[in-house]
Length: 267
Length: 232
Image (cartoon, rainbow over all chains, first blue to last red; front, side):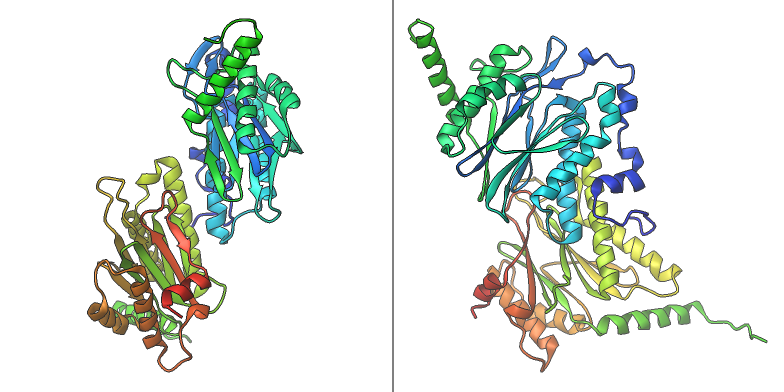
């Protein structure tokens, strides 16, 4: 406990920078000269608006070069009761960013006595990405999505970012990561804003399957190991994660449907 | 010519202690009571400047005395807890270590600074039945001179602390329902208010560390809920 601490504000990241710099990794320095094919990367995450709010989803595979680095990676994290971050890019710095973001929001709320507005949270993430710029230039790129339910306006909101911290509020859908482009193409055709939860789950799973079909670094559902993507719904009442059996059912229907279309019997 | 003179350390300490006690006695008391669903913390506080605050998942803070001083302590506590939880794990952030750190810091300020802090604080930690060995509640009190004590079931800080502690000693029962605990707390605060207008939902600050809540267990009760619990 320090009475002599220099930092007096409400940001946890700044507190670390000022008073506990040894707890802050210098990713740019760490990345310099590193073989990036040896570094695990998170691949595909997506988000879109639906009837009750916003959906945010991600596959589970982490890839280092052509190798599987992790099969169960979590890429979607709740940052508080009504907001979520989905991460893509270099896994280490990305997980760190998600964790810091969560603590940042909680810390601000405790110090100030009230939470940040949803837009304030999205903007805070911009600053974190901007701070990561030197590391991104060395190859430790982190490009997240941020989504939440705006309790002042009663609407789900979604933001995409670029590597410079540029923040873009999306009106419909967005995806990022190595398979992001394919997921986005899939959503472009399927997306409708007034979809139900059930329809949204199907859209999210289909988009992730489409991404894993085209992008070798993205993982589809793994029935052998029982690994399924993460699909989270964020609504007025909070965050609700789709169960594995729900996702499995959607996936099996999708596989059967596509098998028939390809001229073979689903059985 | 100025006269050099000697003041004994005893006298210096006694003067500082008297100064701090007087400062604390000017404000109202706060109290915490353990109940069946967790730990309830109460303060008579008609203003929006809060005396009770969340520190971490299972830990909360209550302060009395000079607002600027105990609120600074609260923020220091939040920084201490969040940094520790970030460097280690969330389960490593414990009330005892926080209370000890407060005790050191407040004690240092008492001996080294010209003016002692005019505050008393409580650190309360609710048990978590899902963590083996962390099931018990803990309540610590730190006084203006850094002296620290731990308390079973209930604790009071403020000018009327001694009287209200006696009152709670006779009235408190372990595992009392939340409503009973809140009504007991109100009677205690009313006792301290002594002839002042009645203590009710509109001038009570009530927070709860809820044992069965997952993650952050701190809840600030809205006045409707307080009114309901008081049976008003």
